[in-house]
Image (tube, rainbow, N blue to C red; front, side):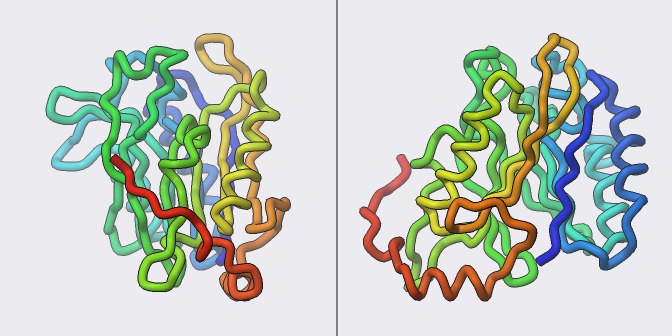
Length: 251
């Protein structure tokens, strides 16, 4: 499967400018060139606690999701990223997985970043989101979720691993860059899974800097250039560690 990690700066709290920015970036690719495009966390605003700029539905849809649907159809590829949105008088850091046929899967960030007071402005999600795309089972995650391995633990279901790929979208600051890189590798190794982490670059409105370090990590914890389901399945058959994992339940 061919993926494109969109590592870029974000325009602070300017939804329209960011929409135009990503439309222009994605327009550089041809239809069918990639299978998935992955954007950073809160790609239309930056990681802001100012929910006054959170998107609300217009004619039943969030404007940035409308844009993603249009571009996804044009590129015949899925597009993934998170947005600050408002719904039913609550704000969410919500991840969207948009398919070319217009179908959308969503995940509300489970672990809100208390260090920045995110829990005082956004409502935490309660459910995982597992999507199937072109033969792959993919688990969606957002930024701070990376620090909590129980939430993203792979497991065997009917003799098969629950997921093959985890995607993390983030606004992970440069000061903790080594933590980001280390945890991406750890999540891949322990789950015998590919992991993709997409982080922004530049500086936000709070003066925090971001150095990207977006990466595709294979099931051995190594930097990789591509995804191969055949190689993953062969490795799992040779080294079936997931079959020896402890049983658990998320409460």
